[in-house]
Amino acid sequence: MNNLIKEMRTAMGLTQDDLSERLEVSRQTIISLEKGRYNPSLVLAFKIAKLFNCRIEDIFKPEEE
Amino acid sequence: MNNLIKEMRTAMGLTQDDLSERLEVSRQTIISLEKGRYNPSLVLAFKIAKLFNCRIEDIFKPEEE
DNA sequence: CCTTTACGTAAAGGTTACTTTACTTACGGA
DNA sequence: TCCGTAAGTAAAGTAACCTTTACGTAAAGG
Image (tube, rainbow over the protein chains, first blue to last red):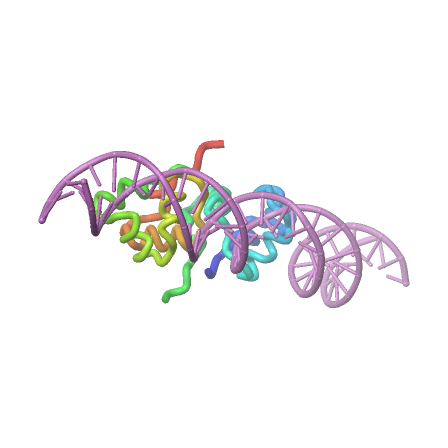
């Protein structure tokens, strides 16, 4: 699952630490998400979309099968 | 996390078993999702949206905080 | 230099998504 | 009445998300 979290985060001028606080997750979670190490839960995906003021589909790009 | 899986499934004339095969998950997973017992992974949410030919936001409704 | 900030890795543990198996109930048709 | 189908519960196990803690590195500033 590819995503644009890092791009959107830096565009907002946020550090990983800032973002983790706003999303109420650990910094480790942000790092792992940005690195593509795992896919977020749907709940977290909704939180991220809300914070970035866009849709889940705008941030997350499932790899084509 | 509220969702419209059951409604959309029956609208397509599919049984829980049919749906589980198309999504490549177990029937238990379908039952639990429809019953709202847990939230799917983002990957599964994308699969569901693709099958129902709509967006994740059209199917899943996060409870307001 | 030394400190602070931002980003990164690694490992151990908890919680939850998801699987597998087995059993139950209700319904409709032959 | 019997059988098959669809939907449901329950329990035990595996996999993945997410946390916590600790440590490493590079850059910028004093």
